[in-house]
Image (cartoon, rainbow, N blue to C red; front, side, top):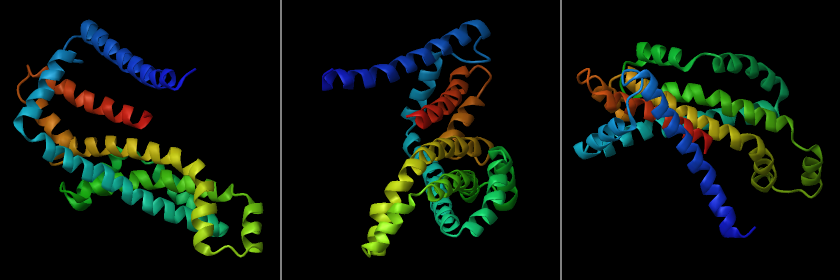
Length: 240
């Protein structure tokens, strides 16, 4: 199979997946009506209204700060704690249980607690995304540290490899197998948690704009569909 054929295949399957999503959306709309799920045309018109209003870039920037900023902070915290826990097994055992408990708390519960602690401003979504994201990265990093090849560490010691080279040329490639899938999951969940926090919070960002449109009149079904589309987009972002 030639390279162009492989490229076409990589594009074909995601396109078919989007087509199945559109077909399922249309089927639910046809059977359950616009109150449950608006039509794709109404949703597209609501999206065009948001884009034409000129507020889309600023709303997207706020959501990116919430989602990417929180995911970045969570990654730094989770990766650092995972490295420390993997380097010192007693510390890893000490941290694993409480962080696993944190992972088991539903994101919506953290959203409510964040609103109580920090109000409905910028800090609450950032905190919620961060505390939702860091246990995922921690678990993957800790598992990667525990699965390291001891032979490579012995070789680095024998050849007196500098600490910098050990970190970038041995440790990070070994951890990448475990951490990379966790990062994909982390950023997908962070996007969805950020949108939920915006809908429930002060109405900022993309989630807040979609929710505001959805509450303008009972007949604005397309805006409700746009909120659904935001959640679908977040899910597909995680699968990419």
